[in-house]
Length: 123
Image (cartoon, rainbow, N blue to C red; front, side, top):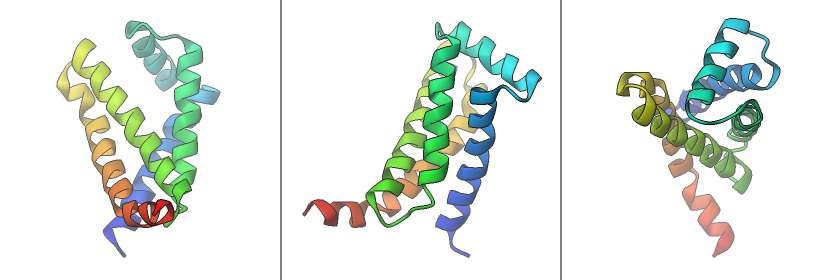
């Protein structure tokens, strides 16, 4: 099993879980904790839901490796992870940002692995 497949599987599972809570609010304790963080960062419930939609798109799209769609998914996950890192570093402690640092690293790995195919499409 390749490292890329493991990274895609981990990212997809994590962000399917995280996005479902942001969009549907089905896990009350985690939902309320995340919503409180978004409010502390000056963001509202609608922004939280939008982040959840971006995460959901990324979690599904990264399975389509070898094309623009997969790369866009990895870029979406990288963007949300970098945003989370920034918020944690500004308003929380760096330790709170460790999960986002891990997902950013994995997302960058997936994005980097698909660069040649995407660049070839534009050449």
